[in-house]
Amino acid sequence: MYMLKQPLHKHWLVSSVLFILLFLPFASSAAERVPALNIDKTAVTWKHLSFKGKEYFAKLVAEIELMSPSKSELDVAFIPSPKGAPVAMTEFGALVIDTNISVKSIFGTVKLGKKAWFDPVSLSAMQYVRERRGFKDSEKTYRFTDKGVHRVAKTPIDKNETIQPPEKWSSSYEEFYPYDSEKKDCANITAPISIIYLISALKVSDFEKPVTICVFNKKETVYLDIQKQPSEALLVSHIEAKDDKAIHKNTSILAEVLSLKARSISSGQPIDNFTLVGLQGNLRIYIDRESQTPVQLRGDYKSFGEIKLNLRQVVYK
Image (tube, rainbow, N blue to C red; front, top):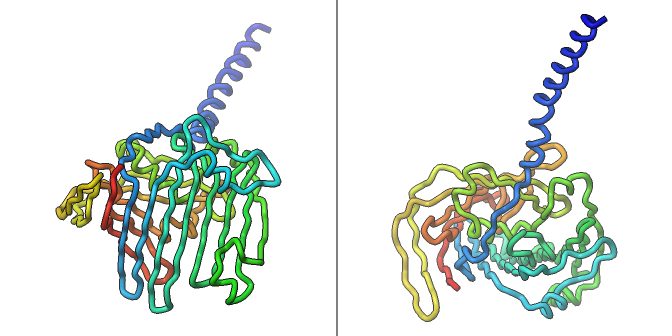
């Protein structure tokens, strides 16, 4: 009887080892999808960025401003949500990144606004506003909660309303996008435009391995993988302003390059409609390693192909 038990014991031991070897890597990889970020808000030295780019029939101008709102300003700006507990300001305060984009093409001028309120340490979004004027005018406000994202979409009903501010538009539609099972891997969910802040807050060396964050993209939460690529020589020409002084920097630098790729949480397939500062597709950010300031943004704009947005002015704190 003893001789029969020993093989069974060995069989159980071998099976246990095989189980650990087979399934433990999957458990650890799930935890690595959204690692804890070591965000240092003091590392972000800029408060205003101005980009310009032109390719064939399209010209883009992007103005990005970083601000620290007061509690009273947040109370006025935030909309209520019928579901979930809204994400509130923590002891780390809040930041607002406000982006205004002007696109001039053979089809006319379109103005895009992207504004996000977020936690400067966790990057958790509190509220996000997307506005379009000039073609298919709309304003979409997203209020982030612990259960999902509440969206209020507004559009003008006629030409008379088109010239009015969005708060006077008559057509309004509300929808709630609940967090499903993906929320367990996303302790913090942010808005797309907050990425510009993130790449200045982290060290470039932090992106040697892919840094994955959770971003709410229009109607769903997606994974965004950010990874360092080989450095590239880049000619920069922009104004650097601080206090009452301004200098023109016109030189060649060895820029750090970060690639951005969005993918579905459920299927892992690439997300084609992820947009950053109006750009999509093969998104890349070029960074001045000395100041940790983005000096060029690359991506596709609709059917016009790749556009390079070059830094024209930076205002430091």
